[in-house]
Length: 91
Image (cartoon, rainbow, N blue to C red; front, top):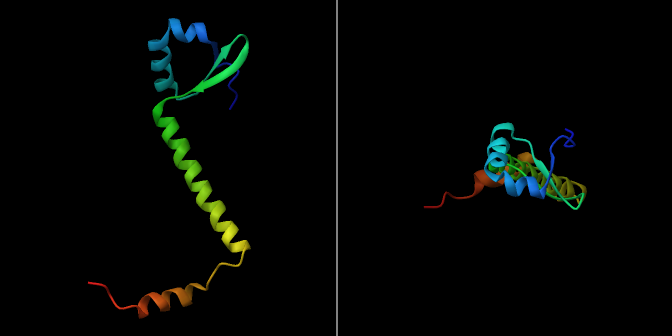
């Protein structure tokens, strides 16, 4: 996704904050805010932010799992199931 069409100066944000927030919610596309011609911030709607955070958390879990596999910290599933079945049920 290209964000070049979603670039506004900070003065636009200051003058049109309510409209910007409404567009963020409707379009669900981030907005790049510039100051003195340089990109300084990215704003997005809350739902998109939460989805991105969930995606990052899942990717981190996958990366940790891959690292454990590479480090040899794995056990055969049959052995794990047998161990779980052998444990007494806690009350």
